[in-house]
Every structure is written in C-alpha cells, then in structure tokens.
Image 1 (tube, helix red, strand yellow):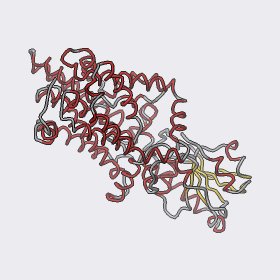
Image 2 (tube, rainbow, N blue to C red):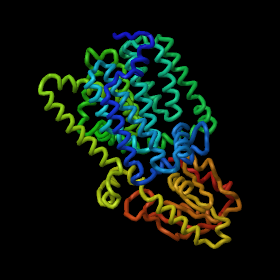
Image 3 (spheres, rainbow, N blue to C red):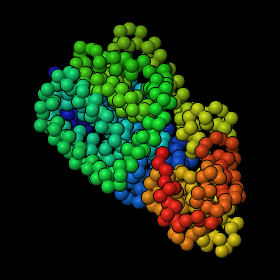
Amino acid sequence: MRTTSPGGSVRRFLSPALPWPVLAVAGLMVAGLLTVSGAYGFHRDELYFIVAGRHPAFGYVDQPPLTPLLSAASVAVLGLSPTAVRVLPALAMALVAVLTAAIARDLGGSRRAQVLAAITVAVSGYLAAGHLDDTSEYDLLVWAIVAWLLVRLLAGGDRRLWLALGAAVGIGLENKDLLLLLGAGLAVGLVLTRRWDVVRSPWAWAAIAIALLLWAPNVVWQAANGWPEITMASRIAGDAAANRTQFVPFFWLFTGPLLFPVSAAGLAWVLAAKDAAAWRAIGIATVVVVVLVAATGGKPYYAVGTAPVFMAAGAMLTDRWMARGHAQLKIAGFAAAAAVSGALVALLTLPVLPLATYARTPLPTAVTDTAEQVGWPQLVATVEGVVAGLPPDQRARAVILTDNYGEAGALTLLGSGLPPVYSGHNSFWTWGPPPATDTVIVHVGDWTSADWVPYFLGCRPVATIDDGFGIPNQEQGQHVEVCSGLRASWSATWPAMRHIS
C-alpha cells in the first residue's frame, strides 16, 4: 500500500498539483450555472429554506439546520434573488469537480485522467444539482470530501486526516442524515476487506467521536420535538415502489447519459481489480448504500454520493484506453460524448429554454423541479389582488393560510402589503397558529370542501392562479378562497392542520 509522509496529504492537496484545465472546467461550470440561475425563478424549497433560516434552530421538521441557515445568510448578504441563493450551490458542485480530479490523481491517474475526471463531473448530474439551493448540493459536496479523504487514508495517508474526515461528516450530518448510510456501508466494507488496521485505529474512532459531537445539537433537537424527521422519512417511503423504478434511469442520467460507461467501469475496477484492493471497501460501501436505499424505499439520489470515486477511477481507465493507440480519435469521441451528455443534462434540468418554448415541450411533466420555478410572481400578484378586494373590516382581521411551504414562502418573501402568512406544512406549522382575533382566512392552494368543512363555516373561491404559460406545477389552476367562521379557536384547530411531507 502507498504511504505518505506526515502532513504530505494536506500539503499535496493545497499545492498547485492539479492541472490548470481542471480549474478551468470548474470555473466554466460556475459561470454557466450562474448565467442561467435567474432565468425562471425560485424553487419552492429555496423559498422555504430562506424563511426557515430566519427562524434559527438546531433542526427543522424535515432536515437539520445547515441549508436553511446558509440560504438565509446568502439572501442577507447578496439580496433576495434566485441567483443569490444559487451562488454557493454552484461553487459547491464546482468543488466536487476539483475533488474528483484530486481523487483521480490519488488513485494513480495521470494529469489527463484528472482533467477527464473533472469533465465527467461537469457534464453529469452535478451540473443539474448546482442550479438549486437544496440540501442535496451540500450533501453531495460533503460526500465528495469524505470520499477524497477515504481514498487517501485507505492508501496509507497521514492518519491525522481522520480528524478532518470526522469534522466533515459531523458538519454534513447537520445538513442531511444520509451520511449514516455511508457509515454503515463503510463498516461492512472494512470488515469484508479485513481492514483491521482501520478498525483498530484510534484516529478512526476519534473521527467517529468528532462527527457525533458535531451532530449532537440536531439529535437533541429531534428528540425534544418528537423525531419529526422519522415521520418525514416514512412519508417518503410511502412512494417506495415509484422510487425503486427510478434507480436505473436516475443513475444513468446522473453519471452523464453518454458517459455512464465511464463511471460503471470505475465501479467495476474498484470492486474487482487487483490494483484497486486498497479502496475495495469504498466499492462495497456503495453497494451496501444502494441496497439500503432501495430496501427502505428512499429516493435514488440518496445513493449517489460516492460517485466521484467511480468517476475518477473511470476517467483513469479511459485515459489508459486512450494511451493504447488512436488517442486523437478516442479523445474526440470522449469530447463528443461529454458535449452531448452536458447538453442533455442542461436541457432536462436547467432553465435554458425561453419560457414560452419550454411550456410547449414535455419537460414540465418529465422533470418537475424546473416547472416548480415558474409562476411565483403571478401567484403573489393574484393573492395581493384578493386581499386588496376585501372590505376594510375583513382586511384588518385577515390572515393568509397556504396548502404548502412553497406558497407560504413566496407570499412571505415576495408579497407586499399582505396579512401574516401561515401554513400547516412542515416547519411552517411550528411557527403558527394565527392570533385568535384573526378569523378571515385567505386560503391559497389545493383546498376542497372536504378539507375546509371541519374548520370553517364557509369558503368561497375568488380567484384562480395562472402562471401565464399553462405550465403544470403544484400551483397552476389552484384557487384562492376566502373563508370565515372558525368552528373552534385557532389553538384548538391548529394541531389538526399539521401535515408533514
């Protein structure tokens, strides 16, 4: 196994050891993402995270605190805009490209292999991830950092890097709990590969202690609030069958539609090649993670965090293939495959088409995340019109109640002169209920008579939400209604209005 002099791992990573084209690829990735970052609008999750971050806590109903706090901080520094909250995700995914190149280097790849690794990331699902401010972007970045550190440590790198790994995992757990899956998978991988040197290492156990210490505030918050993330996980598992059918298509698209063989070859090399024995535990860990996610009905993206290792290994194998002859032709073929993959990923997941053109394609129903970025200004304007049309005495006693956190976030952040906004959805429920004296309700979103009859004497639709392009999303075609006559006090009604999804 390889050995590295004390401190050499850190010095080598911080030194200008990576080829300049790697940094150029990362820079182009950021530039491209920021260019289209404001083309449509906010995603509902982004609106929710900004509001959540303005209610600082050690946890929320549906995730730990890191992403909401970063979202609120981004807006506080850069202003309220989609671009403001998407700067950090773009930088995070570009850093994944750099880390993947570093992994290729540490696996023994040449400078060309390192560039190929960065390109593979830049035209993959990491490009799509860099467009939105969500928990996934920081989760993917932490997994990439952990993967790079593991590659070095399992090859005999400076043992003090275990402390950095523990810190990375601890911070990552304050963003998303999926790293627990990696821990379980890695434990299995280390045992099956008989890496007793790691199992017995006090440095590795110190890393676990550091991670648990950093994660503790969120665990305490979850325990004190009835473990709502477990409820959230059970809701997601309710779509288990649909989630499982998406595994193969998702992995194919995420690793780049035409570059999928690169990552597949990299995984096979890590699992089976003699010269990959030092890193076999990572390959086994990945298989375990995929099995766990599929068995529990989780979403496919939960299992892609270790992709940088296989993209890097595949890039190294691709470089060796190029070196065996006809290099120029093979390079041209890789470049063409990368260009097509990047174009397809961009078309499917980024707002690269004019809205009128986008509305005429099947994309809004095929990839719903992009469609969910359309129509918030129109929704807000519609609600503002409804509120303005209320008689003064009703307006003075009015509150807005929304079906979901996206609507609540949009009205809270983008509305002008509106009554206070409430919702029973996820963490918004914890910030309610309305004051007892406010009994005129402007309701926004999916709302049938069966929904409102238990709470109100009457509701009447007064407006319909229209994004102007007919793009189908959760708000298009929904009603704005005015309700009155609370059947019970808000304090008695509010517990029944809670919904977690």
